[in-house]
Image (cartoon, rainbow, N blue to C red; front, side):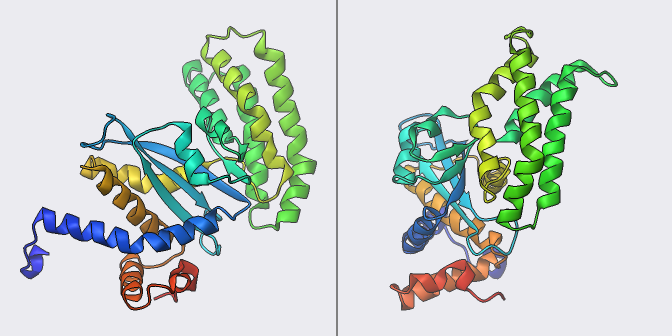
Length: 301
């Protein structure tokens, strides 16, 4: 604001941010209620340094729903701050949620009541790491796995935009046999490959995740991976490189609320500044009319 001749102290700006987060919290909670009513969501978490926190490393958890594209009425991205990575953080946020939840291999999610769907992208990365060790222009066992995974992603590309029913039917007829072939290959080679080798570790990880991964075949609303959540958390990760840390737990909680509304606005193709300004203005005038501020109820500028 110094560009227009207004000088504000860091303390003043921080106080305003905290106040804005407090005013916007009811909207955050309304979005959370809608998110937890969805049949399928995505989750991830990323570390955060908070100077005045009890533990050295805190975490910003992210939960999202909707298609990873514009046009869905339930494109929601919510951040949830905790000075912990314990399972209780997810348990508390999810509040008994029993729908599908796309996750990576982090065991904490297994303590929730959600039906977990594992991520094929994480499985693929394990084999990509093996491929890198193999050397250029060389082929081996890992190429068989990567080829099968590539076919599964090819099917997903072809069914993008189709109805839930069509996706389910095509996955059952085309993807399921490939998934079965992949599983059989992993089982066959589990005893043949040294478990502490990179390939052995990739096989072990894949088999540990396989039951949860293949659940994507049973419902056309599900995704083949958890890239939705990874893309949702990316703006926070990029921002963290610039501002490095939060100073207090209160500030980190405020960041969670504000990042949630910013990323949800972006996911719904709204101008962030205009959306936040509209929300603050409307909350000041009509604090009980929260539903009018849901992003899909806001007219595009």
